[in-house]
Image (cartoon, rainbow, N blue to C red; front, side, top):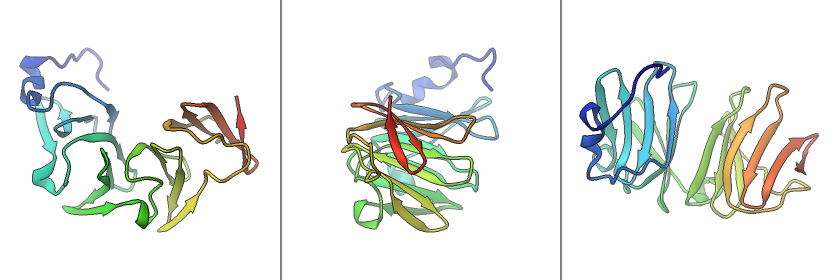
Length: 178
């Protein structure tokens, strides 16, 4: 929760000078840390501490596109045209399209309430991961394939996918365009 806190250069953004200062995505973790993806790695701001995950931590590409801190402790980091990394307990694993990812550039990472991970790609592909099993979702009826911009879940448990072609809700095994 960032109530009353404003991060400015004196508070840490000065350290991001090599990254540009463009933030592509951000999220809050359960400890209150703010994760931000940049052209120079993934930054985590917590209290007055700033840390960075990038090339030095095992990422082949510092141009990070998105980040998700999974409830089981995995940190997922999508990088520009370099795959998606899962980081846990110091281990860094790279996942590419050939490994089950929807694309080598994953544009959205989301965890639904059932613990399923959702990955959307630049070409509109969508896959899920649960208990080590990858499942392709973008082939369900009603889906208009376009770059995935966001994935969310509503209070009824429906998954919503925002793409460049519009908004889709996953209902009864098919996508309903809105």
